Image 1 (tube, rainbow, N blue to C red):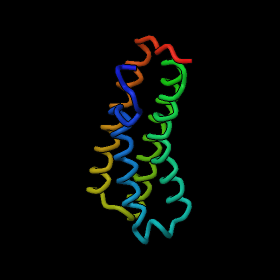
Image 2 (cartoon, rainbow, N blue to C red):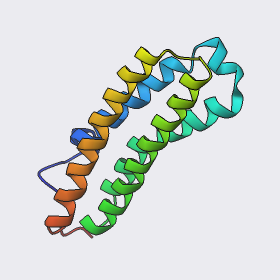
Image 3 (cartoon, rainbow, N blue to C red):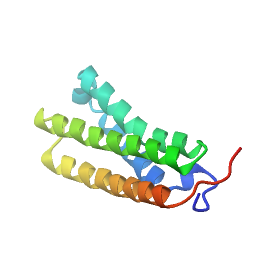
Length: 127
């Protein structure tokens, strides 16, 4: 698959992983920690994005990998929605939301590129 030997080499995974780490930093804030439902949902959405890319990479073909990449993209959108909610509740500032949105959109664009690549190419012969 485009010469990748490990899922960590895929730009979409790298950007998604960066988003996850940034979310983990925000989750350390006491006000966000106290909102258990929001923090749990945000953590799971952010975690899901790189996890789905990793899982898709381990599957047998590009079609199935693309399906997991689409789930990753959905998780990134969900993460952004939770961050908008955090802003609405004044847990993060508007400027912080813009910064996180920038990183999430970079990850979404990378995942979209991965999906396009996977849809246009044949998968590797794996057994």
